[in-house]
Image 1: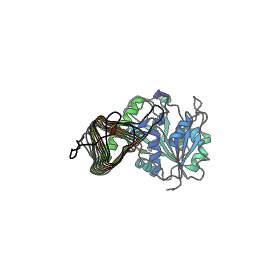
Image 2: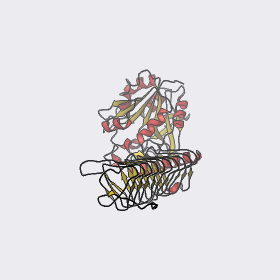
Image 3: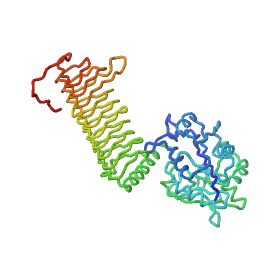
Length: 452
């Protein structure tokens, strides 16, 4: 078998049945554009070239799929699949085999595509087919007396009985030399388009018929409306859940657990019910996520618990306890052994190891030193109406309940703010302040610092 494979991904069509401003191949399936799923499956074959054919909303498709191994080919007029592939000839120069894939089939697998190549062997072409109860708008496969494919009849031209049938799933592989000779000979259809499917009958009529490899209906699903998009989402979601469970992740209620295809987990992670793990979230071993938690592009450390909370675009260290009802967002970095609890929010802040922030508090645009205690109701007043300003809190500082920190302001190491303080100026290391505005205050000797 040739090792010099070129892949064409068809992504030029309008996809009008989706009834959407978003291009069909850009609709996400488990958080990834469906066309990206197709490209990723093709990459597993180590092709020499991947050519993506763009037309409708071409700039959006280019932006979504742009990569060093992708070549974009314009189909300026949507004249059918045959025309689209012919436009890729220059991009695929030097390839001995050409695989053609539809960009709206997100459930295809590398194993199926490998089987497709194996099916061709010395034949001019091979394509994926499957048996379905109702072909609908899909082209039907017609076979000759020997069982070889003789033609693919488009749904609009089919005049046979309704009911079950073998359909063309839309994935092909060709001997490149044969393809480039045959494609210019494809006749124009009644709609003025050139159909790739016509090559099947051309091969049969020349005495060298093609071959097929079979797939189940789910794997061959082409998504051209919202019903099929939901069907593809469900199938892909089950695949993702099964992959992680088999790799050592405990998912206590798969029916209420939603994981994007790009998320990753180490072994011994536990996901409790009603969780959404989105984007490129990564969860380390021993972590317990949920119930009722959303992670979006979040990194969670070893043995950390995140309960009934939202973590977005942020990192949480090891052995932390987060939630319930916390919100960590905007590039926040939480160190190890931290406690971020009820109704606490952290945004664009660095929280060092061992910090405790237990209730009803907000740290925005702040740098909080190790082992600091942020008591209930503490807020960094970080926006002055024109710009954001930072707050710095030193190690082992104690910020009393209902303290307002008017940024920019620095609280020194081991400093103490009394309950209800409004801090408008820097507080030195070990200093105690109280009042509105906060002023230096001498605590009684031997008085205990309250907990948060």
